[in-house]
Image (cartoon, rainbow, N blue to C red; front, side, top):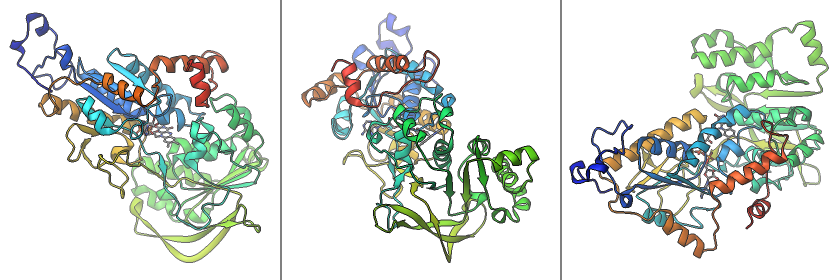
Length: 490
Ligand SMILES: Cc1cc2nc3c(=O)[nH]c(=O)nc-3n(C[C@H](O)[C@H](O)[C@H](O)COP(=O)(O)OP(=O)(O)OC[C@H]3O[C@@H](n4cnc5c(N)ncnc54)[C@H](O)[C@@H]3O)c2cc1C
């Protein structure tokens, strides 16, 4: 960005400091209309919106365009966060405020890397921020993984949350036992949705189609399998508490897995200590008569299976579907969170008709011009600045890998925004005017792509609310992109 000293500008301009509320504002900079920093963000999940929020808050004139491949905004807040956690989705209100700013625009239905390439965006904007998340799931890499009945937990989550590409998933829930591989929060989300009485899910924004399938579900037992032990689980206490208190279910924990843990938990940090204490209580504490009777009568169960590593998905006799999973028994080498699971040589077969793998995600490369670390599955960067590509930044899961909650993504995105503003102020970004959306609109229109604006989304939003259970109640999510486009008169 070309910077000029403030005394070069007419008096009326000198009264409007563009970086007024910014920590960077000690050196004031002024921009004419043509010199407005044009910034583009790829991805409208939390990382995209938090980055945009930071840029708009700390630069008075910057303009931010957010490109999104889905027709609708908000990424995993809409398509990942569990429907029975509506309070988590309140961040949508903040994102909406950002999108409604007259210095921000949302352009959905634009796949970057297909409809428009990153070099084209870099040509049109002063800076580009890649915040496109981590959409691929880690494969298990074991025989039988391709059998019907094996799904990624991410696809299952997308299915019940109305992600268009997962709407045809139709999981077969006619078996009595499901196995979830992985012991993180997503694994617990999936277990909870499988076991929650459907009448409770009715009160959420779960899609109507998935609720119909869940009503017919015969799944009675869900095993949540991890390679390591109770001290290494990746889920958090809130999600565990919800499982322990899930109506009509009982936990199955093997007290043997917890032997000697009572003494060791004194040394672990407080959040893990509290989590492990809850696990210990659930596994070993004697229940009062009322609670015991309640658990006796429970028709559904969930269990944590520790020290087990998946080796093979076992086929049914006709080879047509999943009939079980072979697990290698493991033991720990080392201590604490860094302990490694190594096989003992023993094996165990667990009968099940559904295997959901929840062993992690990874980002994919977006465009050949963007550096990508295939091993770590992230864009190589220093504090959000993409290595060796000036003017290109990244935030969120594609920057640091698919870990952490919304708060982590927020902090990380603010840091990227800060780095970008520092570079802008330091004169490190291209100088001279940039056309921004005007240039990209022409490209997209020539390619037959029709972007969806934020006001279009607000029409769809109103439609979902009106089809739902009334104002302030769960919406009925639109799932079919064709129907959405029709509603927008396209
Ligand atoms: C199943 C699940 C449940 C979760 N539940 C919680 C929870 O309850 N609480 C919590 O705090 N955290 C939760 N998280 C974590 C939280 O969702 C993440 O921290 C956060 O979403 C990461 O933000 P992001 O913007 O990097 O990625 P995303 O949210 O994935 O956003 C990326 C966006 O980029 C878009 N995109 C991808 N490729 C392109 C492209 N080529 N062109 C244009 N756009 C593109 C995607 O469509 C998406 O909208 C959950 C995560 C998962 C997977």
